[in-house]
Every structure is written in structure tokens, then in C-alpha cells.
Image (tube, rainbow, N blue to C red; front, top):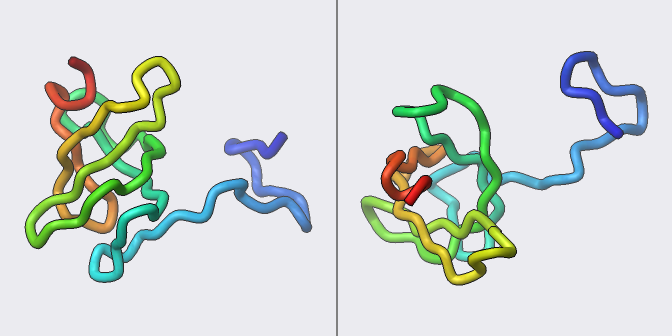
Length: 87
């Protein structure tokens, strides 16, 4: 398992491929999003379902609620409100 506390060994790669460029976002991209009002800069993983001019729709990939959708900002690391993320 890759450690987040120490640099990874040669050959260790992150198992996720994130898109950090909001200008190139498209549905299906995996993104690192934030819930800054409750968790600061802690990263969460989600999949973009839709990309609009001023926001994105993100799936948190929750197996207990596969239809869940959250609205996030159109930023390199989208920000989701605590209400969207936790309710």
C-alpha cells in the first residue's frame, strides 16, 4: 500500500488519475474535491457527472447511494458545500 506520509518508492504510482484542470473537465473525469467549510483542504475522490459553465455535478461513488449527486464549484479542485456532501 502506498504511504501518504513518506515519499513513495520507485515504481509506486497513485492508483487514481485525477484531472486538476477545470478548463478541460468532462463527464467521467475523476477529480479531487473539497468540502472546505467542514474539512478544510482534505481531499475526497469523485467522478464528474456533468460539467456546466459555472459548476460541476459530482458523484462521490458511494456504493450505499449510487444515485447521489453533489453540486461543486468549477475549480481545479471543486468545492462542495457541507450541506451537499453530508445530507
